[in-house]
Structure formats: C-alpha cells, structure tokens
Length: 299
Image (tube, rainbow, N blue to C red; front, side, top):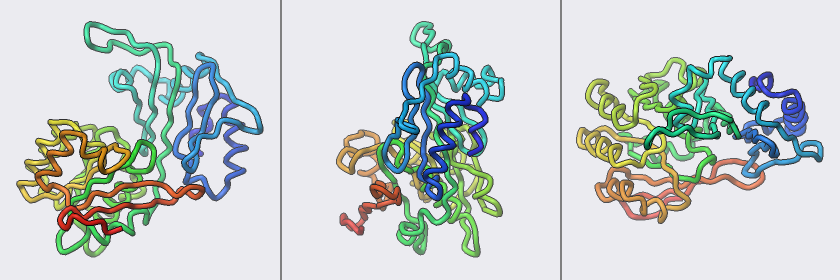
C-alpha cells in the first residue's frame, strides 16, 4: 500500500502485519482511520478492525497532525479551502476526511486546527465490478440509473467501473464525468476512453456545462441530493442526456424520503434504482434493482 510511508511507524507496522494476514483480500480494505488518543481502525469487508496483533494502536494529536502534513506533501496550506469543507483530495482518488476544531467567523468556518481524526478512503480500480448491472443500463440507448447505499459500501467504485467500461471499446460512448471531489477518476482505468472529466466542478454546474458544451451520451456524478442538483438534472434530462449517479440512503423507502430525490423520481429521471450492499465475509457486491418503468424488481 503506497500510503504506508506517511504513517507513524507503529501504524505502518500494524498495517503491514494486517495486510499480510489478509493477503489476497486487500481489495476489501476501504478505509484507514486515525484518531487522536483513541484506537486506529481499518474498515475491512464490512467490519471495523480495532485490534492489531491483539492490541490497540493509539496515536496522539501531534502524530495525527504530522500524518496529515505528510499526506499533503508538507503543503497543508494548499488544501486549506477543502479542509474547511472536511476533506483533502490526493491523486488517484484518495480522499482524507478531516476532523478537528473549527475556527468560526459568523456562520462560516474560517479554519480547522487541532486535528483529532483522519479518515483515509482507499480507492480500488476494480474492473468488471459493474458487469452484472450493465446489461440493464446498456440497451439500445443508455438508461439512467441511481445507485443508493449507506456510506462506505462501494458506490464510487461501482460508477467508476461503469463509466470506464461504457467509455471504452468498439461501442464506446461519450462520457462526461463530474468529479467534484476527485474521487471517481483514476488514470489507470480510463486509458483510451472517451471520457471528459470535469474536475472539481460543483455537481449542478458540471452537469449544466457538460450538457451544454460537451454533447455527452451519458453523464456520471456522485452523491447527488441538493435542490440545485435536482434542477440541473431535470434540465439535462429534458435535453435527452441520461444520468448515472449515486446517493446516500439505507433503503429505497429512505431514498424517496429525500425531497429532491423524490422530485427526480416523480419526473421519471432514472429508469433503474439500484440498491447496493456487500456480501458478508467476502465483500462482493449484491444488487437490489428496481425498474421504475415497470414498477417491478428485476433482481
């Protein structure tokens, strides 16, 4: 794992032992979390691992701050604006969630200091992860789909593979990828693809620009839900451009309790609603697919 060199020695040693113990299953490591004066944890195959060699690994506040400094290549100030939003994005889809003490000015966060925890998301270029559901999406024309699941189940992994697969090969489609937080695009997966990546664009603005200027055959974006995003999606749909997106929700019923998602449902924006989960013990994907056009489950 490339990130090991950035951690305190006690953390990297514990992680090396753990990774050797799960050799062949590293694809199911989704997150490493450091907490100041509390146990480190690793999210693995749907569970949280707290003990390494039978013991907790605990960092102090200075070690957490130093780790962030190293991950940012000693240029934390470069990421100041996103840190105020709670995250840092590194190359190749690595996202670091940042917790600390907020300096407030009025209703705005002026700065974050005294780092208390880091949540390091581990992206995985899993080719073929979306094969099972692409047979529904890739018909005579691309069908819109909304993939929903709780956080940290694999929604981004899935749409990354869908976007890469649809944009390559003899029947490649022109794909517009709205990568707001830099989590979706991975250079190794999009070689020789027909993908236009809008890095860092707010989702609503990215969808609007892609629809107006890029003539995409399908648009991909992650974690939709705001009123502004719903408005942009409705506009794109009226232009005939299908969207494949993700949203946070525990279930389909909970998904439709989100007002802006309900608006999209009522306007028949997505044909398929795909609930995502992981098979316990293996971490492989399980799908619960609703065909909204037929109002019937297909899987």
